[in-house]
Length: 579
Image 1: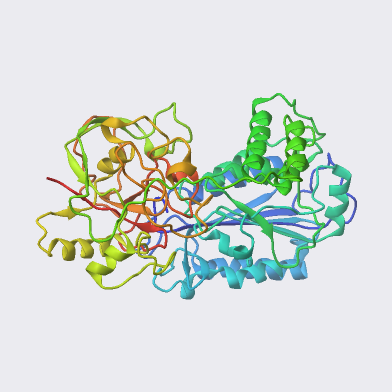
Image 2: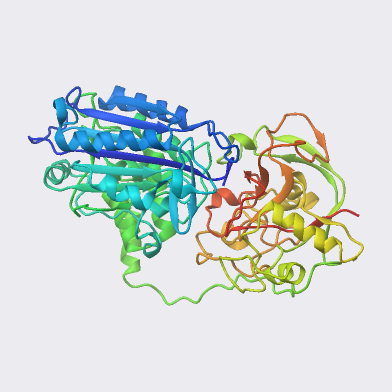
């Protein structure tokens, strides 16, 4: 949801079966491994904002594939739909016929798509440079069409990785796999078995940058983790498996990625990247990088707390730091105690009708806006942290509900939890909210309702002058204060059912993203008084994270944005007013 309307990156890696048994220390043959990149930063349609990072990411990944894994590379910058289709059809034809010795069946093919993307009528689309967002089916690259075409390329092994909003839709069965875990039998840490499976079975594997239709930023954390893995992963057997790459690096991206299979995948197959650096050199188990990956994997297993999650940890770290604790946890799960659920509902207030005198007075003051160096997971656009001074203002303790929207507008646009009067209204654009405000303020209640500024929103989310410095709004434990992808049940929830923050405000983290009044702009280091954002721009600010997002998005410092016309089923707002 960050930076632009919707972003998309498709990464397709195809590895073919070689004619002889591969050796762990063997490099692939020159001229047989090809990587083709389609990266779009500049769009012909003014409704699609230009991007900054796709071409840079393509160049970085291409350089690593060439230097470490022996690929020849080709980058198509800002390609049109015709140019993309022409190149893919050419690859399909040449792999089938092997004309002039090109693309032999024992080589590798790596396809990388990076740029805008969107969802329409339950389908996902990559948008080429000449795409029309009003008609993506005309100039877009549809998942439903190109997934089977990629599957039918005459390649022995294919890996598709997508870094995009709605990228999970590449998985044809994503709704039936709620956790999106990668549990492929056969791609194990034992080198001989992995090599045998590589030779014997066909692979069709994908990575997606989101797990539950999360929004993906232009400055892709997924691409960052992928690049980090390709650069620094230790190929202890002379090669790197896709499971090792995903579990040790890619899976640590935000939002949480997904891995799975599609098409003609054979369950015992293996996907391998051979290291050109020669014989394997096992990494010391005490290195910071290995320790971090080990701890992160075990922490993830603990959060899921299932037999499968702990087994996933043991598959990747058979001699890890937490093997003992892992085995103990698995034993306990075989005889789980009978425990009652903990009641966390601390907000049973009546929220019917439009809020009036129920608004919370936020006393003005000076605070540090943005993410400071000592905080975890800072994004670039959250810096520099800077001083902001605000005057007093009022803000609603709740997000605007479906009932409140219907009272003013006479309709209900919501999709995530349809006809739930006390759930927040969603699927409303910034422009829709302006129409709502005009009608509400015309009712003559004597108060001028508005959206909070971005600075007001962050100050209120932090708890104003009562702040305790929590990472999320009201707690360091997200499960106490927010509905997010770990507890929401894949839908919005009634407002006021989580713990409030220091000011008595509910759902400032999670449930639905909230529009602010500002145009999105870069932070400056200087102090500011009552800032209202840039005078103009392309994207309006969004804050707070939503029911389908990761904890990263629910941090009080996290910034997102989108076009004023953008609607989404995890996107709503709350009201503010001055004196």
